[in-house]
Image 1 (cartoon, one colour):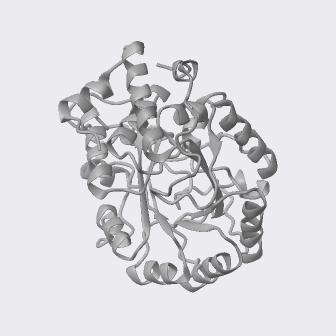
Image 2 (tube, rainbow, N blue to C red):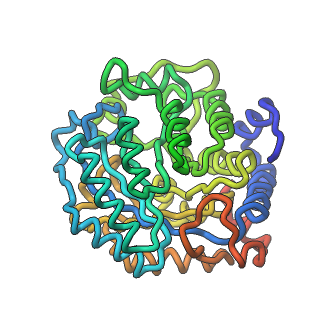
Length: 367
């Protein structure tokens, strides 16, 4: 595990020189290769409910957004997506939804149990803040991982853009530790470029990844939905001490690279948000600076457009079969291989370390 001082982290976050950034990206890619190999794991995403009781100030699913058409997928539709994940060779399904209280703990547990009994898939849940009893029930049903993004480790900024659902609502960092105690692999993540976010905030995010020893780390650019207080400009969060960050591809790639160096064995996706701000090359860029996971969308097309956390998401109309072919082509074009099995953290791949990225691939990263 690399030792980087606070000053060095801040210097890298502020770095703009293309040649220096290529050094950072090459360093991160070497760490990626040494610790998680050349496999890129495909996690099939199922966005099965767009209902949400939260009022997050940037998210299109917020309860107050009356312009959004809401949906919930049926049990059979979800299981159909899981079957498709198996047929496409994916090792994991990621079941994601807004904080929808109509999704009972027992109903979720039944679906998780079916997937674990009938398929070889790992199951990742991303259902927001739920009770300890619910989380324990899902773990007992077979859920392997839980993804709970905290978006920023700066408590003041977090509360400005994430109103609590109740006065005694849980702290997400504490909840991640609780999930670890229940036996889940745990995932968190942040947005880059939130209004009010400083370079010091991002350095704090990196320290938090490491302190939590996260198994999964998601990093994407901040993209606000226009039908929200932040997206419409009605709200300006308090500015943290220091210089305001930006949500550019370059800044996001710097964060991905530093996360890989600081957390060498974590699974790090090249996110859909990164692919959204650069539809031609964003996903590849993430894979070239330390990422080793991609999350193709299995949500049926008729629902996918309605899961509008932010507008104009990448691959919004692409059928799962076409998306699978496209991603595999991109992976092979980078000299990398598609991972097999569930791809748990630290899981050795028999082909890991056999393929060296070429210098030309490293230079492709936009610096």
